[in-house]
Length: 304
Image (tube, rainbow, N blue to C red):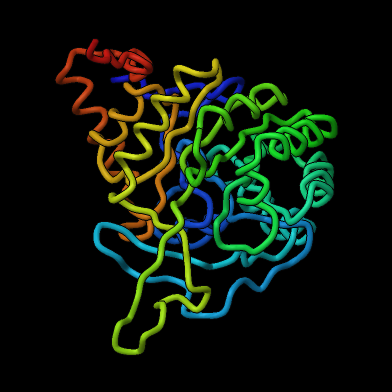
């Protein structure tokens, strides 16, 4: 058997496939179809200090080679998550990553502090959601604010911190360096790209929020380029995200420098895609004569 185990810092995953935040809720819907231990981990829906109802509809739109969403971090709040959702996730047989979002530094700190009550595997700091009007992307696009948030969270928790970065910046490596300097244990990239869809007949944007985050195959080349840049800039584990739908996609990210990957839009289209991708990975690695998927991480050879 091919060894699919990977490490993201101190966190060991039985395979490199993580369900991306916002696309699998807290795992309940997927669990009705198959055993969640098929995933290396599940990153929860973004959770905030207090409940959020999210943005008005319509808030999801299909686009060429992707989708736009402006859900707006609808969630029950951190205390309800710990009480009602964490026990289910903890019993799912896979690693539990809690995506934490906020509108202020204090929001992030208080949510992280409350999570000390449960033995989760990592906190994924959402510093990049483009669908809320305060916090998240505003924080994640300023390296000094990003550093302040990661430092403040680091001061109140011993859980591993994964900083999820926005691609809507001039320099992704500068943001990754800020996260590294502040004490992050890994970086997750990329989150969605800010985009817009238009209905010319009504003369209005398709989404009520006007803009939304673009995900899916359309963003994969951008994500790969940013993973490569960050790999050269910082010595932190990278979780690659963006347009992953096949085993070849996974391996492209790992060769580029990712230790693991997150799968979002593809899992919404085909909820059981991780089962197929995991089998494809074993087949491809056997065919290449590799005994461990970790042999491929960071082996990209750039042209001179």
